[in-house]
Image 1 (spheres, helix red, strand yellow):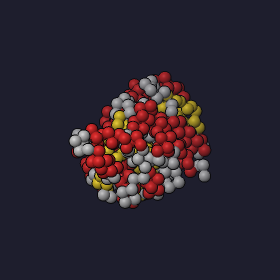
Image 2 (cartoon, rainbow, N blue to C red; image 1 turned 90 degrees about the vertical axis):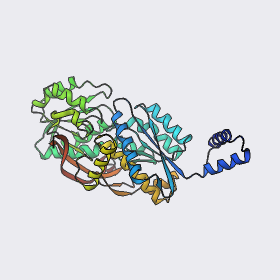
Image 3 (cartoon, rainbow, N blue to C red; image 1 turned 180 degrees about the vertical axis):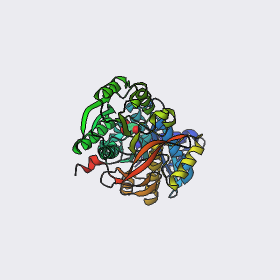
Image 4 (cartoon, rainbow, N blue to C red; image 1 turned 30 degrees about the vertical axis):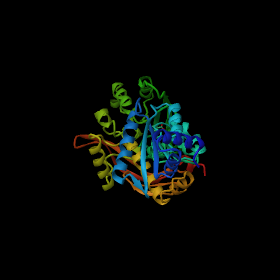
Amino acid sequence: MKSVRSLSRRLFGSLALSTTLGLTTALGLIGASAAQDTIKIGLIVPMTGPSASTGRQQEAAAKLFIQQNGTTVAGKKIELIVKDDTGAPDTTKRLAQELIVNDKASVLLGFGLTPLALAVAPLSTQAKVPQIVTAAATAMITEQSPFIFRTSFTLPQASVPMAEWGLKNGIKKVVTLVSDYGPGLDAEKWFSDTITKGGGTVVENLRVPLRNPDFAPFLQRVKDASPDAVFVFVPSGFGATFMKQFSERGLDKSGIKLIATGDVTDDDLLQEIGDVSLGVVNTHHYSASHNSPENKAFVEAFKKANNGMRPNFMAVGAYDGMALVYKALEKTKGNADGETLVAAMKGMSWTSVRGPVSIDPETRDIIQNIYVRKVEKVNGELYNQEFATIEAVKDPFKAAKK
Ligand code: PHB
């Protein structure tokens, strides 16, 4: 049902355009516009601030997807509307509201940080508009609305395999160092619990403020504790600052092994981080060097369309978010009603550039491979080279509740 507000806005808009045509014609125009066959997709991401790379990557990927797959699905025209929330939750919420009420967006995508995704959850429930989280990764996000889906990953999904690899590779005594908010706390908990259960010891859990982080005092504490390894999570965009301070403090030469989630050795930053990252073992769901024909084609097209920019896991989150919307619309034959789309998205599976993926019909989270990788130089460029695969990993946080 169109709201009265929307109809009056359309009416006045149409009248302004057609004063000479008379009221009847204007009403006719409303009818035409109400039945218009355009489906609007709102992408809300940070395009400025420390998470700007997330916005840049996600916008580029969503546009590439449309370029490759066309602007029409099941007879409906697709329009992508991109908004910059600057990483501020109040702005994310306002933009989501405007997209739903003014633009009549059928689906919202994006959400570069956990607080930004959480700010919109009540709106997606009230408006019955699917909210596809293509970036943020705290496990509990999908529980905040039955309209939330996720095509990124969860921190427990990446952190448990890192701990399991550590246990198999002689890492017994560890310190964890994470950004002090949702995903960092998830990484800390799931990594620490897994290590402890496997007979290892966590000697310190260090939490660094998310905004303007100074890692130096925390790195000193890592050094003093002299563990076998330090396990690190910082969100996409922050890895270069962390790695710079890591080497400045001489941690790279201390004999303490650095292990991490792939957010730290983000493909978008890896060249900037430089050789200090060589040999860092980390776990994640996507590497630009993932060896599949789908990924090779994706990386090539992405670079070509974006002045040589290398896609990172954020790009793939948005690319698959768009794939989920297109596949759902094909299934509903172009019906963009929120509840109809939600039903269509549950259980959807496809071959992503990251490998096989599916949407868990119970949790609306993504089920995907997690890869163990090591940073290596390939033809002079740094890459996260995958060397082991844990297949079809479900979010452990939700699996543990059963
Ligand atoms: C988050 O805020 O949920 C988040 C952001 C960036 C990441 C991972 C998690 O790389």
